[in-house]
Length: 230
Length: 230
DNA sequence: AATATAAGTGTATTTTTTACACTATGGAAT
DNA sequence: ATTCCATAGTGTAAAAAATACACTTATATT
Image 1 (tube, rainbow over the protein chains, first blue to last red):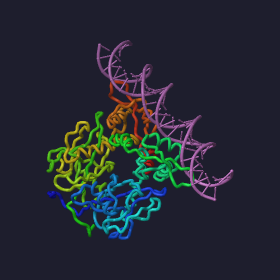
Image 2 (cartoon, protein in one colour):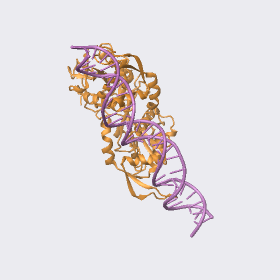
Image 3 (cartoon, protein in one colour):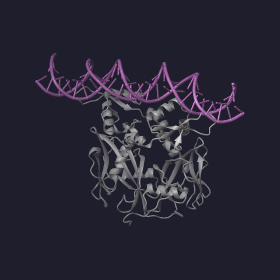
Image 4 (cartoon, chains in turn red, blue, green, brown):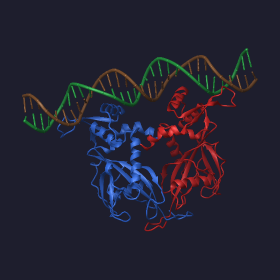
């Protein structure tokens, strides 16, 4: 595409991704160790510049893949950060995307470009200082999913395919940072009608094994898509 | 600020504003008549390019002022549109902002730049085709405020300083596109405790005059800010 | 057989939401 | 002054949703 009649700025769009995962009862996000200036050796959100000829949604997918090796995650935009001084080397406006994924279901983390030395899962409760304004971007994403969880059960993507209700509750508690009542939680989750009870139980635990459930994505979509488009 | 070490693209950020107003029982938005190619003479959302040295929130204020003469509106970002082909002349990523304002409390609409021939209020229920992807941007903003209205009483900024409960209800009905029950609506609104009943009544109507109310912004902030930052 | 650990379950209470129809008021018309 | 018209203003019962709360059951380990 030719650019005509528009001013050319020294301007760059970028994408930053906040990828949430859940493991060992802890909520985590995906960080990269930067291998380039500025902020070389710092931890940062996976993020990079948008190419001239790609839409921002595609860019988000490509960038996440290049930096972490993860593909095809359902990412959603949550906010755009456009302070003049947010990047020390120039004017960079960045669009924040988030996704919720299953840590163990994924292939190993392996950056494709040398721009990231490695990618790691890091507990959200113990984040170090991040490069750029990435701490702020993370907080914004976290606040977004917390608010959303209050009216939509969006947490299933973080769990293994088969999970117990207790695991689900622990996940909710991790996101909302508060204790929930076991009986009320179960009642409510089951009332949505989006869980399939399996004929199978948890294995390898030294106490009463819990029933396993599966998330019924079809029913979920039917129930919640109307609210989305409202 | 010097730009160092970052690629220079023929890339532009812009801002588009969806400004909602309410008048004569109808929800309206602010449009401009474009005076420049592309889409010369079309109706469009007030929008323009972000300068190199201004943050996007400031840019939104400046741009709205230049195109419509309105200042100091509390605008909020809602989504960023980054399809490659959304602008016929080049790659332009635009950040959408919205605001809810009082139509009659405002000074007259008067574009400061010749880029807009004039600015007008247009009913949302009868929008013509808009320039660029502005119809889509409008829909996205509308859907945002509708969803938000369901859990936060954000509509007061659209009403005159003193208003009746019926006016408030009509506004809700216009935004949500559905009829509400009068008694339940009043009960709920008053229960928030953010309305001050005045010792004053509606004037100039040929039927029983309704009590006037004022919005109590201090109480509103106290109640709803915690939910925002949650 | 005893122990330890978490799974699983029901009810009563409170709060919130919904459905629903008549009387009161004030200006306009006669 | 009386009537008419249009909207203001009001309460209650029923249903649904949210909350608070404690014991029994199942399984693996000792």
